[in-house]
Image 1: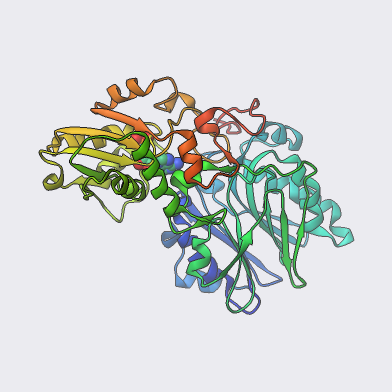
Image 2 (image 1 turned 90 degrees about the vertical axis):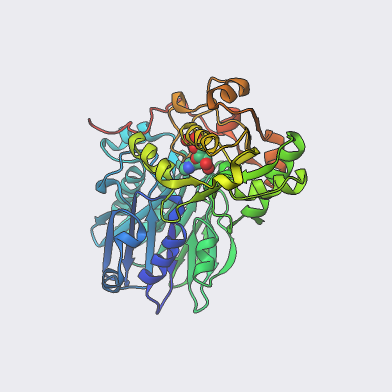
Length: 456
Ligand code: AMP
């Protein structure tokens, strides 16, 4: 998710590069809304940022104010209608919204608004738009509307919202999903899910948007508000540290790559193994494997090569595509693996399908033993805050012990990082660890799955 307010600059170009840096967060669709203060244009389509936009389409999107989005769906199907930014024309106001996260009161909100066949993001836009409509006669518009309806949203939402004159950035009181604020070299403000998007634009990191904070940027500058009555209770998703965020991003002031290396070091301390070679599962396992090798003093070598042009297979929505993707993604180097006792290091096992195929591949390449080391604890519980794992039955570790998983994956040994080790490597702090501990920071009793509002 991205947003920019940059007088005198072409916001569509800046948004394009920002989204390009954030492509790893979602690959189903990409889009942006751009305004020149009067007219707003929205352009979005299925596919990657580079497939959706080109120089010609960007040049046509004129204006200094924009928001952008790449989608990884957690509510609703992967279809054009659900691509973001979501957009409504409300009288004179053109309101667009981009959302990272997942609401946990989607059903109640849909009932209140009398809507179905929409996403949680569309519901938020609808709620805001109705309020804009009610208040626009007094000229307060978007700002008042968001202040008023934001407390009715529950769960995970980092949002960028705009009309023709304002860029609004909002983070839920738990701050489940990241959101940061930066200043452009030629003036103007940027908001983005991760700091890597600021780097690509040469923007200076200013600070994170705080949990429970709303930032409004317009012609009179930047102002900050607190729309929520409840006290902020920071619970950044710990899986951002494990897997999701880019290694070159910083969260809570910590570099993600360094945190992942530390996870590997702690894992080596907790679960040492006698072996010949440490092999990372690229690319997600690389920093942890480096840390593991450093502590264990076992030789580190590349034994699996990733095709650079294949995206993250897990993000593709159907199992059939996912299975095909895995085989396209990685290829072993038998010279590194044959005849050796291999420590295979990866960051996580979610459904287990990639890992199982990987183990077979490494075995076929001649490894004599495979010791699997995972730099996060077992992923046992569904996420309702923005990871597409709401179906518990598909989580490998949901009902299995570590021994049973070892047997299922056919490895010689298996060890996961402890939760204490993970939190220490991530710098302490207060995280959402629900997927690992069953400790959900909000009420999730109303959960009904990804397709809750779809009329089938
Ligand atoms: P699997 O064995 O199918 O559970 O896949 C494990 C692989 O998926 C690991 O290499 C992880 O890095 C990766 N992974 C974990 N979480 C996610 C996610 N939310 N999206 C995409 N890939 C993920």
